[in-house]
Every structure is written in C-alpha cells, then in structure tokens.
Image 1: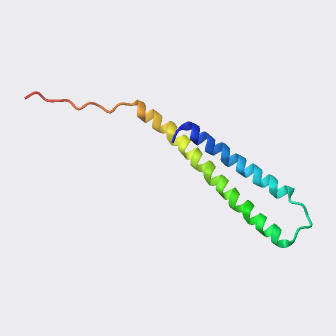
Image 2: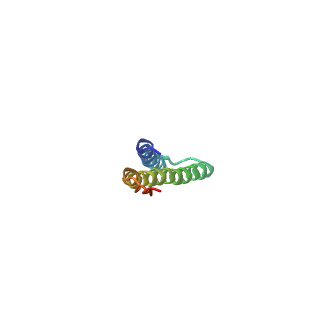
Image 3: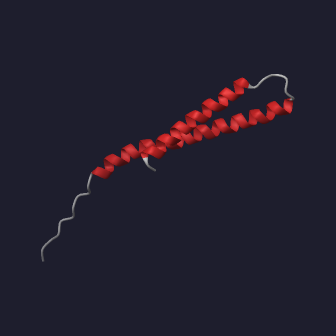
Length: 83
C-alpha cells in the first residue's frame, strides 16, 4: 500500500471518529427511544470502523517505513567459483 493511501486511511479514520462523536452530541431530545437506539448503534459501529481504518492506515504506514529501509539494501551477491 502506498504512503498516500495509508495517510488517506488515517485521515479518514480520524474524520469518521470526529464526525460520529459530533453527531452523538448533536442529537436533540424529544425523539422516540427507537431513534436513539438506532443512532447509538450507528455511532458505535462507525466509531469501530473509523478506528479499524485508522489502524490499518497506521500499520501500513509504519510497515512502509520499515520496508523502505529494507528495500534500499541489496542482498549480498553470491560468489561464483571458476571451474
């Protein structure tokens, strides 16, 4: 996964968490209980999804940095014996 995509996933996860927490605080009183149950489930599921997306992006970004250091190293050449 490229660094751009990993960064995008991190930002997407942060945005999802912020947006759904904000929605949770902005729910107005006076709705039936079913409304709050449904929106509570939506908020919980999307918070988990946002965290998962962010962790995938973070893990990929961290692996990409470690992998780029390994990719610049070249394996030792095998010596050929003359016959």
